[in-house]
Picture (cartoon, rainbow, N blue to C red):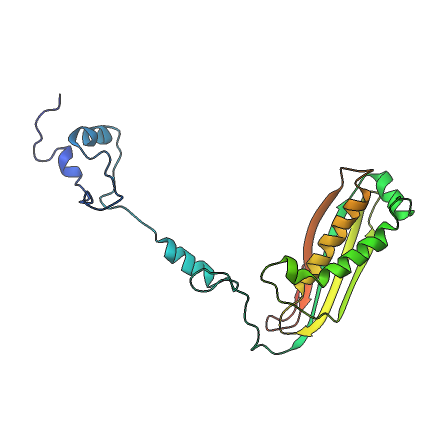
Length: 219
């Protein structure tokens, strides 16, 4: 049994938020019994709820991401007003296999054929189809695409791509697409003898051209 409330008791420490008539809002733990219980546990309830608008969060985020408009809707960026400049990008990726697998790749002993050359062609072809796989990429006419392979050690193969053109937007995605598809082609051609193949990391090494200028990954 709780005694009668007097001035200076727990009832004076809390007051209702007067939100009972607001739709979707339910007040919990504001009765006298609840007030005494909260006070005995040394818990203080806020007098007013704190609410963060999801619209405010969205508006702050979309201003930094050019593939979204001010409402958060997806869009392909309008690059029509940008000058045509020379664009170039390099990327790299790694494929790790069992030692015997990499030896057979190097010695052209994989039954499906020359793994390196098939992967090279697959990667180059992929650069020309990037806009069909990445939804908001622009369709680009490329001037150059090449892929090189390096046997780093007895289990690691390094792949490097270089792509360039003259255009209004960069070719980073094309360079990264070349690495991704070349690595997946290697996996496909060797999976029958080695299911443990690992791919990655895949990353941009360098880009140049456009308003952002030259960027190069630190060693």
